[in-house]
Length: 129
Image (cartoon, rainbow, N blue to C red; front, side, top):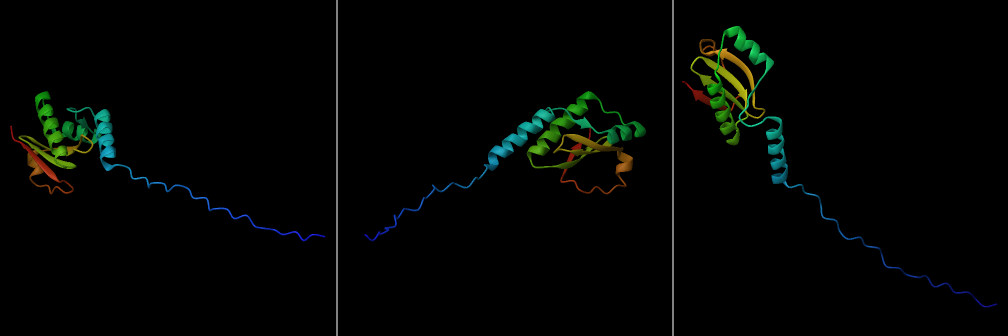
């Protein structure tokens, strides 16, 4: 009988093309975050938290529409400069405002504000009118 000979067939290794690592563009995510904030909080409008509403009512703090507009404009300007939490000093009141969330967190009259220590703020807006 004939001897059978086996000759192994050599195959080349299968190489898959190298995939590029996924690197999300930081700029794109920042643009999305800005659009999301705009959609959630229309520019020019501040949200007054329930806590701040209660404090304003308890302390008799009245802020007219033109002052709210001025505060909102300055908070927007502060946010563009990187401020997250700000102290807004008015002639008769002091407000803590989250520029990041466009929300008034709390309010007090200026007399009460004189005895306070304000922490966790990184900007102050003075509107003594």
